[in-house]
Amino acid sequence: MSSHFGVIDLGSNSARLSVWRIGHDGDATQIIKLKEMVRLSEGMGATKTLQSAAMNRTIAALQRFHDAFADLPNMTLRAVATAATRQASNQQLWLQRVQAETGITLEVIDGGQEAEFDYQAVINTLPIQNALIMDTGGASTELILVQNRKPAHMISIPFGSVNLTDRYQLGSVITAAEAFRLISGCEQLFNSVWWLRKAQNLPIIALGGSNRTLAKIQRRRDKDVNWEDIHGYRMSTAAVNDIFASILDLDLAGRKAVPGLAKYRADIIVAGLAPVVTMIRYLDSDRLLFSQYGLREGALYTYLNAAQQ
Image (cartoon, rainbow, N blue to C red):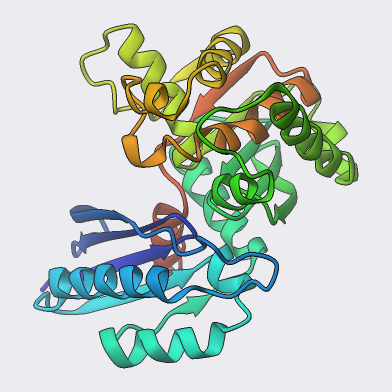
């Protein structure tokens, strides 16, 4: 009888569920893939307190996830929570509430574990030798320097699309001063990561919803049929800069109308793209390579590898 393995990735912006059927030969076939925008980190502010509206939205999403896999036999679930829950001052109350109302036990993982999952997902699905993996989420950005296919350095930086939008109070229209402060803030943080210089001129492997939006916009511009299928897709620095500049020029309504840019992401996309656009210049990198796979697939490979030992 085949078994099932599921991963819930509860981020700062979105909650995602993937479930695979694991055959006798260890082959994994994805049977469920769900995503809900929960904005868990919305309004956390300086006190890092999860707000009740955000928690209620997230509980409702997790209940729907639970219903989706509840009847599957031999089900192993790994439910992980990242930056928003990690940083929350009311973390314990939140975890207890999730357990009580959904029956799901959330495991709060640190930035290093998140980066390790990203690395596993990329190294098992893309033919890379040396690169910088960059996963921009809602409230954190993971950076992994890969040398000869091995992780040489990794770090999780506590900024992402949602908390940068809050910090720089980015509204419908982004002023030149706001854009300058945002980019400068990203640059300052990168300066504090001593090993980043070792990634000079290397390609950047881009993960996370904001970064993937770049590829989706470009593929829509190019009229690609499967525009959402971006795994392994390459983009030049010039194309990335062109898209970022055009998005900066638009107000919120204009951003919502951009083909390939999801409406629910329009208010946080400028802050979501600022880290990768800054990183391209910081490393003088000539291209981005996109990975469709991240934390959930990394957790799957970790589980399969452990099962084989």
